[in-house]
Length: 206
Image (cartoon, rainbow, N blue to C red; front, side, top):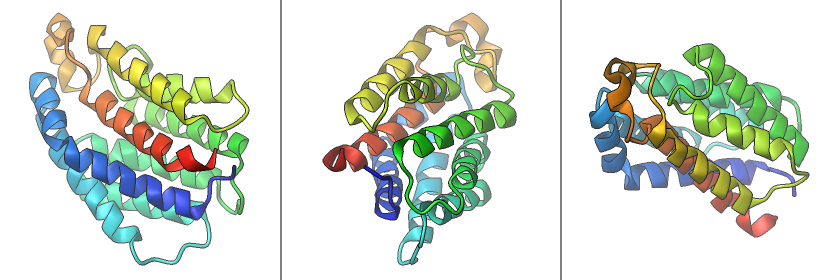
């Protein structure tokens, strides 16, 4: 399958739906080890993103992702706006002028997103951040030849759950040191919902 404009739009709508449904969960995770505003910021950001792309007529996926990126960067406070904005901006740039996004192009765009998270967040894997979901997923997707919704879902879930045993060394959670263990990282959890939404939107077209 090719990843088309309709998939890109459905993906953003799906992310928004999941974030709205799990806003309180994301907030309580962030209250345990962060600023306590992750759920609020994510729900506001993706609602604004949906508002932005609704009714627009896009000729390519890059345009959708670029509008999502600029909306998240301008409307969301905290670390999540710049980081998620960077993700979509990097992906948008990676597929610029590409009319039909095949699997390898999508997979390459995901790797660019990972690079963006590392640069913007000055993060590496194992530091209990959203990168601990994005990196394993990008790696796993680069090992296969086509979209696989179950693989995306399983990898995102196991990666998200693995952050529970990590000690945070980045962000507000780093102040807790060993006490950050035993909590799932809120950014990893919201990233799981991002990829759960991706799995949902490609499921019927694999």
